[in-house]
Amino acid sequence: MSDTFVLVHGAWHGAWCWAGVGRHLEEGGDRVFAVDLPSHGANKFNRAKVNLDVYVDSVAKFIEERDLKSVVIAGHSMGGLVISGVAQKIPKRLKRVVFVSAMVMLDGERPIDLSRPELKALGDVAASRPDRSMPIEVMEPRFRAAFIQDASKDLQDFVISALTPQPIAPLADPVPMKEFYQLDIPTSYVICEGDISMMPNFMWHPHFTSRLKNPTTRSIKSGHEVMFTKPVECAGALRELARG
Image (tube, rainbow, N blue to C red; front, side, top):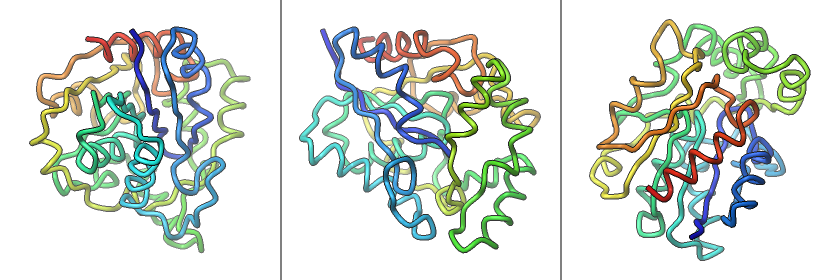
């Protein structure tokens, strides 16, 4: 039995972050598509014009153009905003929605309002830049200490060198979720047990998992950047959840 996965990255990242996870899924016979959100990776969309709708529309279009069906869509971190939007837009094409240490919002909630002071300060920086984006350099010390703290310095250096500025609008826009909570699509959550990136505000689990309706879950002993630190375990969790 094989599944079709569409993998959606989080803030500052690109499709490249799923390389290890995707390889392990494909070795098991699954089809894998990792997408670059607009203005990330190879997608050269104007950062100043990005908002959450642009993200959602791009992924929905990606799936529709390839006529993908029974899709297991998985999103990491900020990618949770996107996959919940895609689920509302093209529900009949999805088999399951999987949040990988990802945001699950209430209707009308703004991600930036949940954020630590550092990210809110980055929002002010973004507002002053022509491309309205947040550079990773401003939060690099915290990224090393609380997002990818369980990786070697060499791996941290590699990841940070590949990150690109994050447009602020998708994190400042109110997230529409009313229709998402009315859908019958099964949901799942990959819990990263060592994810301290939002402390002391809250832990990703149970803060976000508690908002889903009877989700299936898998836990991994990992920090937030599980795709890099535990790619085999992440792929295994996605495969198990897809077939659960």
